[in-house]
Image (cartoon, rainbow, N blue to C red; front, side, top):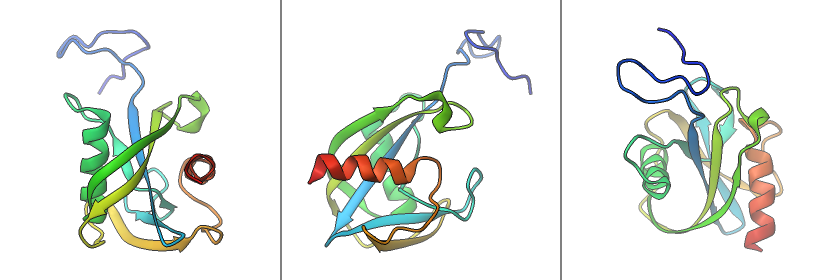
Length: 146
């Protein structure tokens, strides 16, 4: 498989080799935050916030709902945009990340898809190392939420 150079168009599908987009959900209940243990590379085995890539023909909000459902079993009913991080150094593939606060949801937590586990952590007792820049995402979101 040939990787496209920046701004190079794919001869087969016509799409460009632009930077990808991802979403992450900050889900808090009783001063605890829901994290997943990642089952896929990158950062396999690390804890992080539920989320993933935005698919083609999908809004960022729909991607967030899908990823949360796939990884935690929860159905997002209310979310609020927190911020976007476009720093190229945040991800090895320079993925642009959109962070949302999920204030309301339905269902019971059950890991699936590429989440090995789901666990509620005390906000002041997060795991030492989280995937990607998720610890910073949590800290910045808490400033906006509280």
